[in-house]
Image (cartoon, rainbow, N blue to C red; front, side):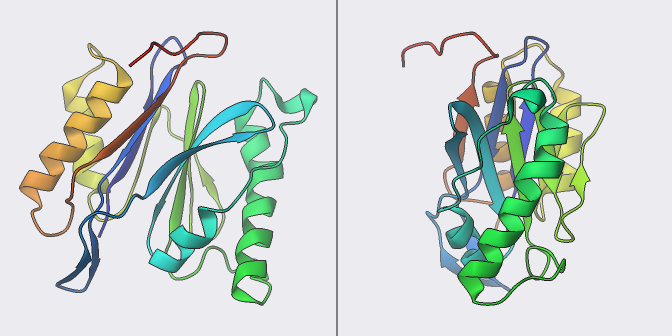
Length: 196
């Protein structure tokens, strides 16, 4: 079971955190499996995170997002809906050897997307879910993660907030969200990342 959590800041930076625990029912299968990663769509950095079936995460780990068309560069929601969602559907369909025929990402899996200044969840039915509070959450810990992130406020960086919340939810829901969390941050558009 999983918690993938993403948030943006007022300056447009975005961060995503995810636990590393893989379970099946009450059994732990793996305790150190990354579920989030950074990729880019022809020069536009993007964060992706998967909750749900392990094989869907494996398949989407090889997804190379299509280029962001110039007309959609300042409209990330439109890019996700009109370009990324069809690419995800085609990629998953090709990997499993049959078209998804609009059935989505298979058995309740969801994809969390983070672009500078934008976060959303692509649901199992391929619907794009954006929220007014600029928080995207998926997995069994999503409700607790959203509530904790909203309670934490915006005084810290998005990377600090999402990483801290994934750790907290992991402690509260021991056994369903766990493993050392991964945290990845993208700076605001035009900003440069600080050296580690």
